[in-house]
Length: 216
Image (cartoon, rainbow, N blue to C red):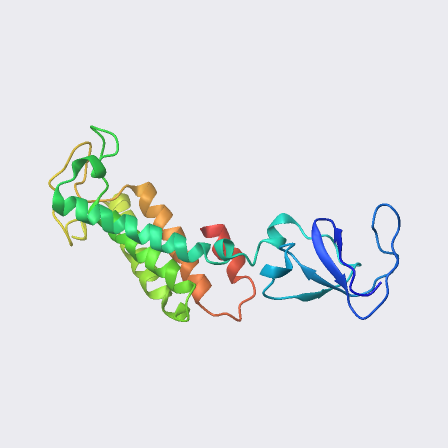
């Protein structure tokens, strides 16, 4: 049946230069004739078509939607959101927006250095989705450098003069070391930054993405 369309497993298909017979009433095909497949189920919105073999396993939800713009550009959107949050915190310090710096009253405020790390890591994540992915390890590595120094300050008691490097905080509520991010935040930033460095590093290393995912 040339030019006949069927719905099989929610996917609109069309035989390609070959006649195909059908089981009735299920609509399953007897042979493995190649088919043109449209994942959207609407020919009017099909931008790209591919040959489909009936011997191939049924695609999962995530496999069918992997090419959707939302999933494909999610890391880019996430990077912009993270960097924007860091910018908001920095503006809040300069504008004295205490309600934003302290989400819960009488708790430690979001530190300035923490906001700087949000900007660095958000920028690095955004760069990974562009043609400038090779530059992503630079902001990611800078964040790792600052956070490792912060962890060393906690572990050794030394002061590397980085807590007030960019800004001297005027809010010191529930803060033992004014201007210093928490050790938990420093550890998380270190892992995420290391993961970004691995992703943007040597692309010939097979296990770099696996290790980056484990760290992040």
